[in-house]
Figure: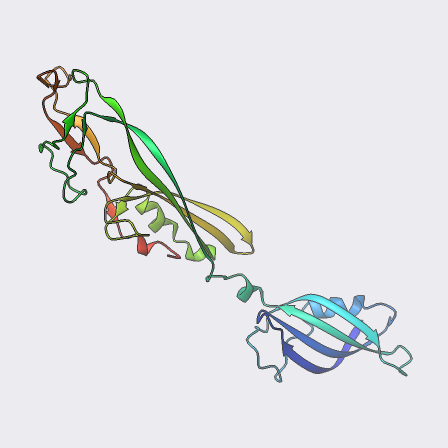
Length: 255
C-alpha cells in the first residue's frame, strides 16, 4: 500500500475546474503506482490547508503520473495528481444557444387583408374582421401565414429544471415581448431534455412566432353549421384564438 509522505505543492489549473497536486509517496511495491492510485482515488488524500483555490475537498482524482525519486532506491516516488471538481464543472449555467427557422403555414381563410384585433389575447367574438372575401360560397381557400420556429437551449442541473413550471406554460403565448416577438405572437410548444453529464442536462425550449398571432378565421354559421352567405360569400368572418392562455416566459428555468 502507498503511503503519502507529504504534499509538496497544490495549484489550481487554468480552467478553474481542476487542481494539480505534487506529492511524495512511499510504496511497498514501488514498481507500480496501483497502490497510490487506489489511495488517492478513495479519498486517502484531500486538498490541504495550503490550497487556496476554488476546488472543493471532494474533488475526484482524474489523472495520475509518477516517477521514482533519484537515489531513493525506488522507495520514494513523486506523484502529480489532478483532481476535477465535478460539482463545479457540471453546472455550466453560462451556456445559451438560440436558433430560428422561418416557414409558411397553410391555413383556411375567408378574407384577405383582414384587420387583427388590437390585442390578440382577447379577440372580439362577434366583430367582423373586414378585408376582401375570397371564399367560394362559404368554403374557405388556403392562405399562407409566416411562422418562425425558435429554439432556446440552456444547460442546468436536473433539480433546477422545475418541470411543473415548464409544463404549466406549454401551449400558452407570451404576455410580454419575448425573443423579439410582441405580446401574444409567440407560442410555447414544448421542451426537450438531454442528459450530457452527471446531473447536467441540456434543455431546449421550442417556440413558434406566428404573423397572425395564431388567430384563425371562422365564418358566422347558420343553425345547420354552414357558413352564412351574403352575395355569394361568407356574410361575416371572425377571429378566434385557439391558444387563449398566456404566460411570462422569462419565468422558464434558465431563461
